[in-house]
Amino acid sequence: MAEFLHLSTFLRRPIVDQDGERLGRVQDLVARLGDDSHPPIVGAVVRIEGRDVFVPVRKIGGWSSGRMTFEGKRVDLRRFERRPGEILLAQDLLSRNLINLVRGRLMVAHEIEIAEMNGRWEVVGVGPGRRSFFGGTSRSGGVVDFGSILPFVSHVPSARLRIPYRKLAKLHPAQIADLVEQASHEEGEEIIEAVGLDRELEADVFEELDTEHQLEFLEARSDSEAARLLSRMEPDNAADLITEIDQERRLNVLENLPSEQQSKVRQLLSYNADTAGGLMNTDFVTAPRDASVGDVLDIVRSSSVPAESLYAVFLLGEGEEPVATVALGALVKSRDSERALDLARTPFSHVHPQWDVHRVASTMSDYNLLLVPVLDDDHGRLLGVITVDDLLEELLPQGWRREFGMTSVEE
Image (cartoon, rainbow, N blue to C red):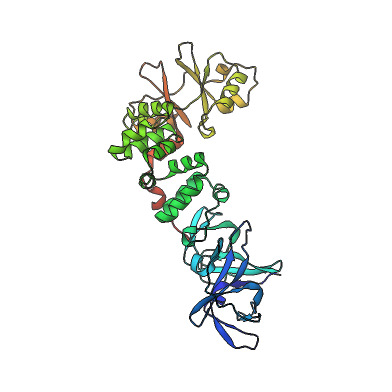
């Protein structure tokens, strides 16, 4: 059975030679980050006569006793220099923010757990409390496996590291946005840089950020870089953000958008932000009124509309006038040969662009709608759609996650 030890057991404790004579004092343990979920310990930083030197792990014994023994023939007295990929467990991790991938939260490390696994010493866990963790209790429910932890490399000077995107990308964009909002600006920049390897994920995360943080991270970007990011956001979210950008930048960013996205955003900017027109999204799926279920599903499959917005398809008449709404669930459960119109709601509920948010909410609540179409005053044109998540985002107060403790850091 593996023996779990605390980093604090060794810090500032003597290291002795094989005769029991004191050589120096342990300052830190060094681990190497890589693909291993439990990074191997490669050695210790030991202070000898005022100089910090490196002692490789193969020359250290006495781990279990908590009193390290130098088992080599001589000590290399060259000053310790960190090599690429190395972290100092105490200096870089203790009392620092770390990303807890299990909970999608930041946590502060108050203890590091190590263990001998498969013949080598490894970093196996992080404890958010100050008591014994393995087999015991702590203030925050115990140790977190190090494989579920991401350290911020901004805490690791000159180590040539970066947050691994593939691990961070397993979180939902809203969780990543919460991490950014919990973190310092430097840590937040590090997260944004990591997700920037996936332009779509970067845009999704930006959509989830509060306005303060959106503007904070756009400030350091050029107008063309800001436009590149906004071009991947939903048109309604892009329009909302453009209205918050400094006025002297607003037009340049807008004009740098791709023509199709720019047209959609300009349309949305023509409406008051507190109305259905300002809240709606101009991405939706339509099909001819006489289309079969199979034909409509083919249109859905080839559509660029995000899957999370595909609650329904709108059937249009020969003059492009909206005729009916058919739920996606009804289409999926029906035979391809059936007529889509036979599954549709007619007449169907809708709102108009000048309606205020509360009237929109009342309509969606009364008719149990996940999505509601926005029609022009003559009911002859489908202008956009409002989804229930966009409505909730508008109705909830700014900063509500913080107010309800959802972005607090685990201690």
